[in-house]
Amino acid sequence: MHTNWPQILWVVRHGQSAGNVARDAAEAGGMAVIDLEWRDIDVPLSELGKAQSIALGRWFGTLPDAQQPQVILCSPYLRAQETARLLADSARPGREAPKLRIDERLREKEFGILDRLTKLGIQQKHPELNEQRLHVGKFYFRPPGGESWCDVILRLRSLLEMVTREYAGCRVLVVAHQVIVNCMRFLLEHMDEKQILDIDRQGDVPNCAITSYRAERRKDEDEVLQLDLVNFVAPLQQAATPVTSEPDRPVAPKP
Image (cartoon, rainbow, N blue to C red; front, side, top):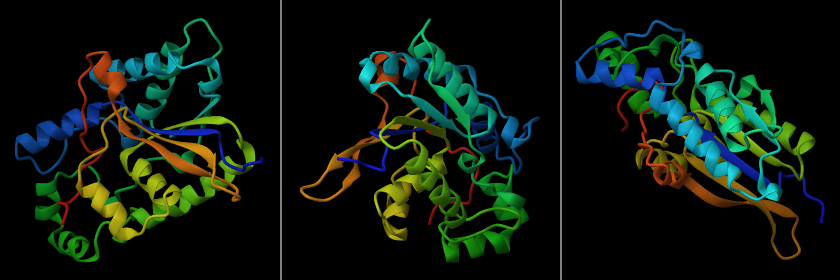
């Protein structure tokens, strides 16, 4: 039966980045600002992030040909592009890699005026915004110059419309960021605000973890995407590669 959905859809968070490492150092040192020399879009993978990406690629390489990704949709941010390319190169050495498509709708959530600040920095420099965010909740709160989760979800609705139009029946791998993974789950699993924030409170999405969906037919209904894997990190564990789950960027404390 015809379906508008991909046959398989994998959603992967990028490997550990240098920004994750810098954030940890700033938080541990009680600093207000994260010391980074790059724009957020230019932050590269750490050495561990590269190893995680290669381990994940080798796991994809063990899949049968009929289950290999045919196209990779990727955030324009450097850490995501590096993850996608390392993954593709290590999955099928010597064979043609999946098509790589960069899509700006998969970019990281924009933090605006709160960019590069630690939790302490947000509280010290923008106490009123911190209070507003705690009152409104991260789903709807939009920092000046930045985005709310709803803003991210709006652009992802457009992305999914393109996926159903251009990649129906294909095997699609998405490489992006933690907020993207959660917002994709919100859309594909028809969640509400409480459900997705409950998931968010359970912990961060591990770097290079896989969340996946498969097109299945339910009785006489059209095919729909069914959740298959959630934050699957066995490929890293099998390769004895450390699993990390730092947030992409600093945000105010979770309520």
